[in-house]
Image 1 (cartoon, rainbow, N blue to C red):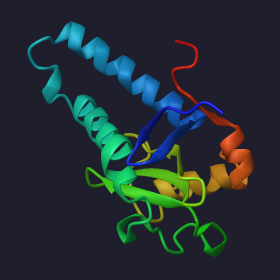
Image 2: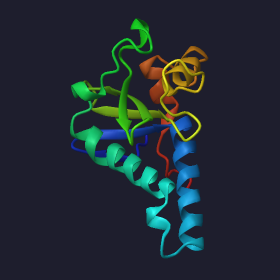
Image 3: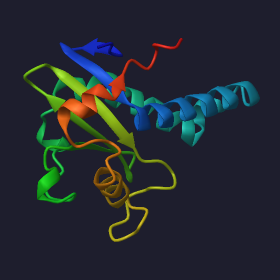
Image 4: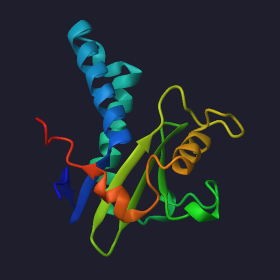
Length: 155
């Protein structure tokens, strides 16, 4: 199975929902770069993209099992195996990992429309839980891995 990259001995995979969000953000930042050549790096979307890439490529692969990524029972006890990174205040990036096969799968990242606000229908935990219940992303490791692939395979 193809994978995106290898960092610190971990193979990194992107689930389609994460890939779509990341691609969209990359396109927006490219457009900003073309329109605002001198200032694009200060735009909130550019900062968001930079932070996501730092997490995905460096910080999470340094220790995906770190206590800071545990989400406890926020998604319910059935989903404690899902991890999340908190960043830029109210954003969340959800992922799973397997130490047995040294794989990290990035599954979904919140955006400006799904910022953290406990009790809100658009809270990232509420949105991600609804997605899990609907099977997007799959909760089963093997199925999740099957539907997660190399984001550069079509390039």
